Image (cartoon, rainbow, N blue to C red; front, side):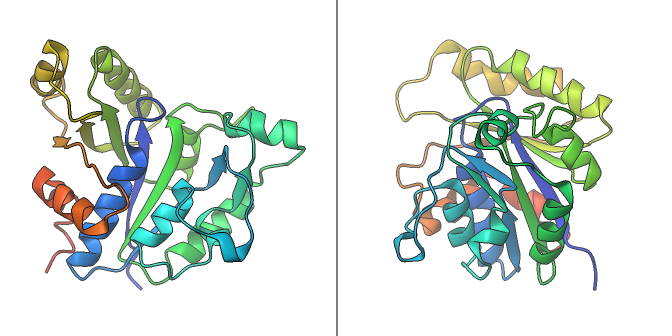
Amino acid sequence: MTRPIRFGVTGTDTGIGKTVVTCALAARARGLGLRVAAMKPIESGVLERPVSDRGLASDADRLRAACGATLPLSVVRPYVLEEPLAPMMAARRAHVTIDLGVLDTALAQIEQDADVVLVEGAGGLLVPITAAISYLDLFARWRTPLLLVAGNKLGVLNHVLLTVRAAEAGGVPIRAIVLTALSDGDTTVAEATNFEALRLLLPHCTILRFPWVDRPDDLDALAAAAEGSGLDVLLAPLSP
């Protein structure tokens, strides 16, 4: 079987729209007739819930729903940790050992019947999974090009440039940078100029804009936002 296209979704920070963009890309891919699967290798800040109480309370729940809910949550999210901390510290405090072999096995299962595989990290690229492994190391291990999600606010230029340099130094290519609107209010001068600035600073990168979405669990709205943002360029090798 042909290996699916993989994307590692990372961010310039936490709370800047990684899950929304990942779900939007998944929903759009499904709308184009592609088989898509997503994974959140480690999710912290989440209480384990009984099977009868799934809902959409976590990032992994949302990713699973966007992909059609065909895979068990335990595969989509191999590790779940209660405290809202970096995985290294959340696991340490919970006396959990994160085993990369477990993550490798989950990825292999995730991509068995997929055309597109989306792997969403936590926070930024250098967030530690263990004392020795960051998400950058995980994406390098899996040879996963990056989709960098950047919140459109003052300071994002520095955050994007630092992330791009870290990725390049780690040998992980940036497939695209997605600048996300963080509210539906009036834009500041910084917010109005960040997109142009990034295009000038990173002319070799694909840079896209993603709008504010009022209903982040509405898959039709997310798919429409993905299409309008030009995320189809990421799916072009597979699109009919």
